[in-house]
Amino acid sequence: MICSTLRRVGHVHIYLVRKASGVSKGHHQQTVGSRPAASEFAARGASGNVLELLGKSYPQDNYSNLSRKVLSRVGRNLHNQQHHPLWLIKERVKEHFYQQYVGRFGTPLFSVYDDLSPVVTTWQNFDSLLIPADHPSRKKGDNYYVNGTHMLRAHTSAHQWDLLRAGLDAFLVVGDVYRRDQIDSQHYPVFHQLEGVRLFSKHELFTGIKDGESLQLFEQSSRSAYKQETHTMEATKLLEFDLKQTLTRLVTHLFGDGLDIRWVDCYFPFTHPSFEMEINFHGEWLEVLGCGVMEQQLVNSAGAQDQIGWAFGLGLERLAMILYDIPDIRLFWSEDERFLKQFRVSDINQKVKFQPLSKYPAVINDISFWLPSENYTENDFYDLVRTIGGDLVEKVELIDKFEHPKINVFRLKQPQKQLSTVVSWNR
Image (cartoon, rainbow, N blue to C red; front, side, top):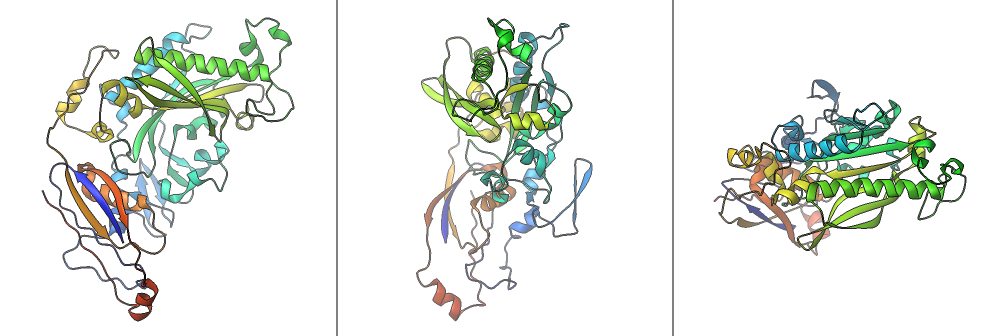
């Protein structure tokens, strides 16, 4: 049995039914007065069912795990809704890159893609980025799968290989991404990312460098903590310098001058070396983005063997919550005019400080229920809560666990009995 604490605002009336561990499969009795079980709130269709999504049809199978709550968010594209706070952040980043990086003919160096479909193949989301088949990020419990071959993208990097293959060498990708996650003010199953990529030829990277004509991009050596086996140290350090300088300019544009910045070494499957940028904002160090030198194997497979490059990714909600002092990630999905009108500004760079909509305290409820003995993850419960309770449920927190000491005896004596706990709450 598991106990959780749920905090909510407003009015909500929810029934949850959970089967006891040890109940024989196939023996299901619906409790009188209960609402449908979790599977009835999700697009999990058995083999043969078809899901219509963004104008396309996808056959469903045992991998399908899209909840109705998440499906209702697909196609909303908050980052493209004028005067939405996520749109403001996106436009500020676009403006900065358009003004700072200009091509030979006076046109913007970076192209922007903000309307690519969030439905991608598992190859695009994982294999193209060199994510191993056994990597934990592929788990069904952490992702939203349309079926065994398609999914809702977990990051905008899912489009990286295709755009490189198309011959692009400098671009930004903005879009909604989907991950099964916990319930609190900082996490939501849908959020928005902005991805940046830039490739350099030998001439572009070493232009203006003393004796640059004698320097090389590639060599055959060994991989270290500082560089890949195919990159020269000179090329790696110049690329790293350009990446950090580019991102420092970006956050300075967003947050203003005098910002304290530090870089933390980290790991991503598709970049090496890799870094996270942290900024000191109001006396607290906050992570704002991840970046690194692109894995040459990825670049080569996309047909750009004579170039090397960097990539970065940042969360739009993360930046907007810091910049506009928005305390809860769910507010971005609000259609309340009191929220939206605060961001209708004449200048995208205008300072905005969010004003709270309600001063009512949260209501806390404890619930407990039996868990199935197999194939359960906490994200299954979070999806169920979101589907039924919507965004009224502010937080779900595990506060206790219990395992019956005589559970095996119980199973032998009463193998057909189903125990369930019906939990409801009202304001």
